[in-house]
Image (tube, rainbow, N blue to C red):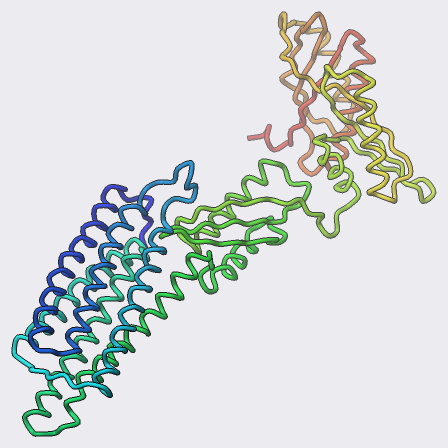
Length: 475
């Protein structure tokens, strides 16, 4: 089925309404012809077909009205759109078909056992039934083509009606042939072929009604397409980052599917990463249900094998706080945690300390291995600092570079810049180190450098060192 979202909405509506209108006019013509010929011949088979076609006319009108309404966009009162009107239309058509069956069966039983009706097969009767078969074949194909193109339940129900009309009309013709043969060759029992043919028509209609009833009832009760939920769960479970599919619900309104899923993600996943995974889940669902409206709810889940650092970060994340520089020491079997925590710079100390105390208590409750926690509270900047000037200090730059090169890990120091911000001196530089140097050692070297810089130049308020691999400076 093509992605209808890429097609013009007015073109879709025009095409669906056009085929529905053509079906109505064809039903009018066929119904009138069958009524005239059925009355003139006295054939129950033709009269039952006339009634069947009359109800098909009503169904075609209902279908036309439903496709006019179903294509309306969603609004404040109908947030899922108006697509279910097509399912309701198909449900009404089912009821009309059952009424047809009741009348046909009643009249056939009367003619078989309680009264005799003279039937006069004529060329007009055969011509009308042949014409009816031709018209039904034409409009069933036209309806089915558009129904498949736009996945329209109402048009599909109409197409199914007219396909069964072809078979029931053929049976009526057979009944008329048998009646004529009975009269011509004086075979009395063949005169009952017409009501028997009518019963066969009723059987066909009941079969169609049962299929429509199941389809429309499932649609109105929000039943998911058979196997769709299992395929969606399988596809979503294969998305990287999804730990579990906690819930998957699918409903249909007209030709549109709506999917509601809850998926488990690692509790340490960032909001941006969570959004990326949700996008991939949506794409996976639409691979099964094209153009579906998908809502994904992400649930934080503890990952099996989480280390203690991840568990500490998870507790902080639950309070919308981020900890860094976590250090854990094992002293005689007791774990001591040290961590840095940034909090809004305008927060009063008492309020900040209370929040930290609550966080530390929860960490000890959640992570039984921890004995003590010490949290270094830092202010999280919320304002842009205004710089006064860039400072040129060649002597200080030379002295700091000499200090840096005393560390064996440091290969080069470049892009050293000084600036004065709020009356305080800042320095930043790029520091080249070996490609394979572990990040833990890189951090130790940078920390030691910051300390040595401030010892040698107490006027420095802030030092920022950017580490670079050696290959980046040899290209």
